[in-house]
Amino acid sequence: MSPDSIHMVVVGAGYVGLTTGVCLAYLGHHVTCADKDPEKIALLKRGKSPIHEQGMEEVMSLAAPRLAFAERAPEVVGDADLVLIAVGTPCKPSGQADNRYVEEAAREIAAGLQPGRSYTLVVKSTVPIGTNRRVAHVVEQTLADRGLNGKVKVRVASNPEFLSEGTALQNMLYPDRIVIGVDNPESADILRQLYRPILEQTFDPPPSLPRPTAYSLPPLVTTDPISAEMIKYAANAFLSMKISFINEIAGLCEKVGADVTEVARGIGLDPRIGPRFLQAGLGWGGSCFPKDTKALHAMGEELGEPTLLVDASIAVNQHQRQRAVDRLQDALKGVRGRVIGVLGLSFKPGTDDLRESASLDLIRLLLEREAHLRVHDPVAMEQARTLHPDLDIEYCSDPYSLAQGADALVLATEWPEYRRLDLGRLSASMRTPVLLDGRNLFDPTAARAAGFTYIGVGR
Ligand code: UDX
Ligand code: UDX
Image (tube, rainbow, N blue to C red):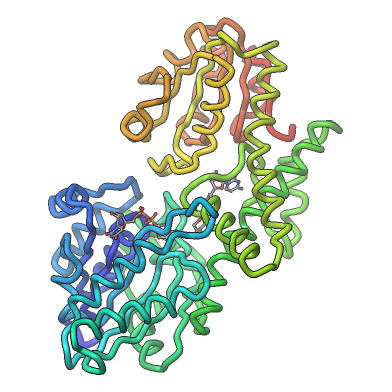
């Protein structure tokens, strides 16, 4: 074990925890990923990834000598220096993030700590502001119940994640910045040691995850825990607001005959705006934006500080789905009894994650209007069958069988393989060749030349 190597445990082996643990093991630390889900742990022990992330199984196998998996956190934290919490923080009905699992993990970790040792406990999960204080209290309480008051030194820190699904390992190894929220120098020191290979980019890139050209060393933002927790929420709220902004402009573009993709290009060239996250479409989904914007709204209500912009972003985002259905309804003169093929189920390309997927929202709206739904997705169909057996939809093995005799096609997730579809073949096989391009993936001129009635978003 090299002197810089840290012995650590990651509690929660989901999209965030597994990516973090596997990459840190690859970088030279000794990592045990603990997760309550026995099936997940069994799969991981066989070197298989429970999630679809580019490079995950390659890096898992490269990191194997320093990577272990366990079900029970208390059994593996005792001789660790650092324990990282990355369990889920789902929404409560109020919209507040539910800390139940974070506190449960803190309790379990405290149950396994050894007297005479000191630990850094790092909260990576996205948590309501002030959770650091609650975690410290839960740990203290549990240690007191074990009669270990004052016998175990535990420092709690915050280290929010900025991973985007589909590019999670790249985001981890080549981040824009690393944020740590600490209130003592020891926590800052061990977190700097943990991330040194990333801060200095001294590691050899995994073969399938090369260092981006012109990538510059990421800054380390060292702040207090509360500000670190707020950085995470503010980042996601701003990104989702930027998308809702361009979607609002898209609605106006449709009315005046402008092309929102041109408008996005034109404003994105202003470095104060930037070109990314200006892709108009069905709006945002995933496990983060919906959850984090709701949590900020709930926080604002709780603290008597209205979050008007966040609330408007949420409203615009929900309306995007409805607008798409209305435009389809107009084109088909009613959707009842129509056969509609939906291309793409996952909330974004590159992942099999269906959480808050705009495609599923659209499918539900169309089912409510008694359309017949056919669906295809390159990777997420199994997940959809398992997680949403209630959906009365027909799964198709390929886009061409999905289009056969259909009244409309909806492009809901911009998987790259859909760009290469033979539009002429698709439209010729349909009863009424209507194409709703929910992510502006296709070229409208080419689609119309192929025989489609083309409906874009904002153009
Ligand atoms: C989620 C949120 O998406 C993210 O915003 C937050 O920062 C962390 O939680 P994610 O990795 O996507 O991240 O969650 P998920 O894929 O649901 O993984 C959570 C894992 O924790 C699951 O595998 C679950 O089995 C595990 N878990 C949950 C525990 O091990 N113990 C618990 O008590 C609860
Ligand atoms: C996001 C943040 O990007 C990441 O930094 C944070 O850590 C977690 O949440 P993620 O939700 O995985 O990551 O994916 P992202 O690429 O941000 O897309 C989120 C949603 O926005 C998707 O539904 C996507 O389709 C949508 N989107 C994204 C748009 O509609 N338009 C865009 O221009 C970009």
